[in-house]
Amino acid sequence: MLVCSVSQLARRAAIVADLAEATAALDSPGTGNIVFATLVDDPASVQDRVDAYRGQIMLEAASASETINAGSAYAASVVEAAAATETSASVGPVGDPYWSSVKLLLGFEGADASTGSPGMTDESSTAKGTATVFAQAQIDTAQFKFGASSLLLDGTLDRVRFAGHSDFTLSNQPFTLECWIRPTIVTGGANRFVCACWEGAGTLSWVFYQFNGEMWLNVSTNGTTSIALLGGGAMTANTWHAVCVDFNGSKYRIYINGAMVASSTSLQTISGSNTTLTIGASTTSGTSAFSGWIDEVRLTKAARYASDSGYTVSTTAFPRF
Image 1 (cartoon, rainbow, N blue to C red):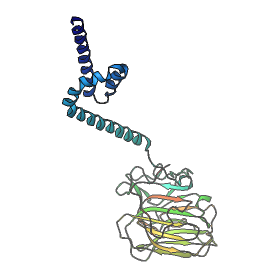
Image 2: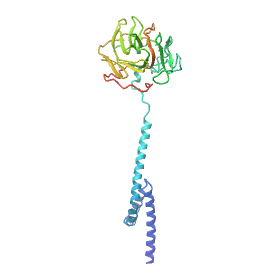
Image 3: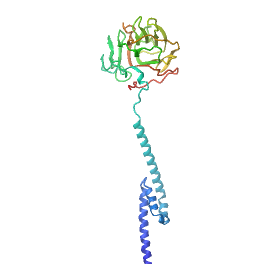
């Protein structure tokens, strides 16, 4: 009997030790496998230990359930955090899917009243260099749509010009020409050139211009005759407007602030080869001058929008890659 009592005491001591290990395991989120490891290591004593633990398990059921639930919540949080971290790490700046087709890009970012680089420099991948500036055209920090400056034109001969390049020839291929303008005048009946390859008789190609509160596209198929292809809209003075014209191979469209205001299916093969591109007035004489500010000029040799329903105007500067 004495030997049996010693054996039972030893047995109880082992059970108490195992119970303490099990309790610690239950109290530690994510470590419950320790209990199962103990049972599997000594399969012959499984029933004895279950019997011994039964009372303790019943007493601790509520806290064990809370621990398990807490552990599950903790695990879910870890998984969510890991997923969020992975997503954050994998998301970067979004580039322009048409970047390789961008032939001119100007943000006019520079020092106030400056007339050279970087404000007047093409930012497209084709790098057309720095524009030649005429009259009082200059970078201005008083008004801008994006960044900290824009191009200021006073309506009297002001313009900036890029040397002739085949990239400026539109012909009968898809294109998109767009920019932001803030006109100071929307009445008077004058044509005010925003962007043009329109040097004079014999070298006319295309011109995107403001007429009162409307935007128009004129083209020439022979270098001499001007065709008023399409136009419309209603802009207000001293307000920024997103203006755009595009062609998808079958239809020309003009948009103001994302809404289509005019369209034409009168297909033209626009003349011109290595034509000079001018922003703000006619190329040679500086007449038909625009009065106001221009920002974010972009010419793409692809139809970006091509939709009668219009498009969503970007709320940020155009991508530079």
